[in-house]
Image 1: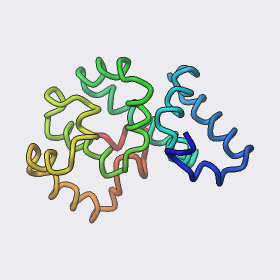
Image 2 (image 1 turned 180 degrees about the vertical axis):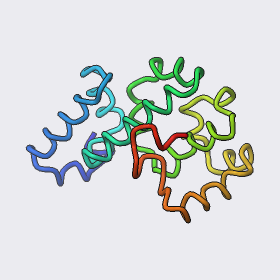
Image 3 (image 1 turned 135 degrees about the vertical axis):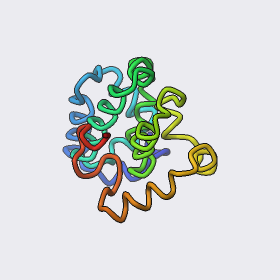
Length: 153
């Protein structure tokens, strides 16, 4: 874990314990999954607690709005959930775009976030313009601002 994220060494034991507790307290995430997630994607322990919670709420809300994503959510492994939580707000905002473009039925939730930028731009030509409008309008990203799902529609 330390080899993957040496910045973890900068955390005090109290801070690390607090981050682990925040991960374990994510609603709907079993404690065993939280420890598997931290082992697979230690970067989740470097997220600010508020950001971790905000992204988790956003992802759960995103999963709930599409029948396909709702079916996929419980099958995502702890490592996949960790990758999603550790993704940038710009990548997470792709979920809002894909849903708004009525493409959610054709794209797995995980793939929408982790798809290489070039492949995403090719598949969703309007995304760059949409993202520029989001930035200009202060949208900022998927998991910034409003957080828990209202930002999805």
